[in-house]
Image (cartoon, rainbow, N blue to C red; front, side, top):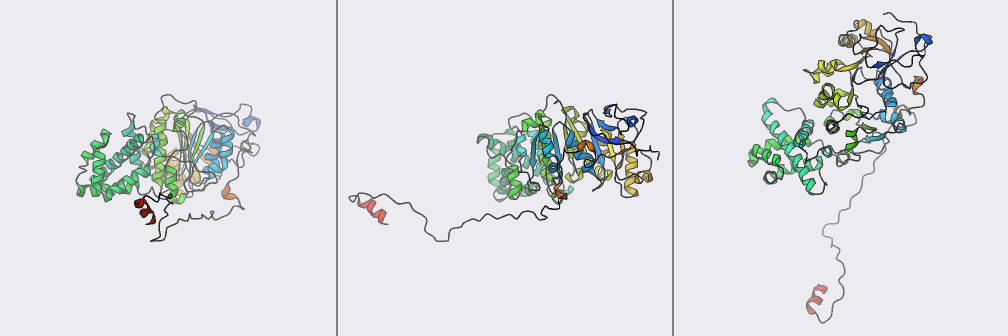
Length: 487
């Protein structure tokens, strides 16, 4: 491959120009400049001894293909979070991104929200109740509830059980609607998925009570669902309730329930595009078992975006690390293909293109074609390298394998794929002093998590006499009361 001699070229000490840094150019002269991209200050160029930054200054989605440990965090996610001035939502499995960038985000005037139910980070966890994103009085309430119900879907139903799974989905929709109706009547209290789970589980013990409750609902859609399910037939309802229970069964454990019981920040600020950094943290080993929890949160946040009637000054950057672990997320497909007009910009990360094809077999090429930036790097073998070559049209697998560890295949919209240098917040001078240490690389940090002290509960001994308050003395001339006191 043709390369310029770059030993005398260096990186600039500062990068004040706006835009997402997607790479450092290794070309001394570019035959074309892709629309929507800038290349730093004209006085800091290869002619004056500097590598050009490649900045996505316009709108458009980004996609990165790289295996685990290849540098997606150091080269893509963290540089973006250290620079991007708009609102961000970040799926942050290990909590590294928030630990490294939270201080900088706050210095940029951002409110930092960390939803960390398992206590992975040292930040106090915020909370997000997905049902708080639904206005039960709104015209779109039923449709938005249906989106949340789809996020609850375990995705394991057998085709032979399609009837039961479909009806179970309707029951879950009806339960969520009813819980929100009840919450409105109670002044907004109690409208959480915990109440939905309790309602469905109680129905397993007493289906007739659920039937009466839904048929008498003040919401007409709940009544329609009840009648459609033939909810009065207990023998039919058993299979339906069983599927609905499977949908909400993962909402267990004190930590998860505490994090979905209410919302600690204003969801209207998400809609407005107010400078806010929201980090969704789940440990990697729970990404599969709790993927529906993440999907619920993401679905609720995307519902906030789609309410926008005007675009905010800057798009909301939606960073999805380990996107495949979320399973199929229809909202991601919609975000990439349809929601740019709502001021939403996605940057998704995949270990290889086959993950994308498996989850979105009919739409994966459309999703790729809607991205203005494609990055591929870190191929470990010929199969991975050939996949990157085929995806970007760059050379062949051997050429991809020949890349240095700090190089990538970069394709910008309207231009052919080229080799570029991968950013690195640890060594690039423009990031000096803007980040904090990665706690996972702190040799003094305790390996074991802090031991939790269980809360002791007191149970009265069986047969113990209850406390009875003293009764004031009564007049001696009232023999009936005197007898009661003596008793």
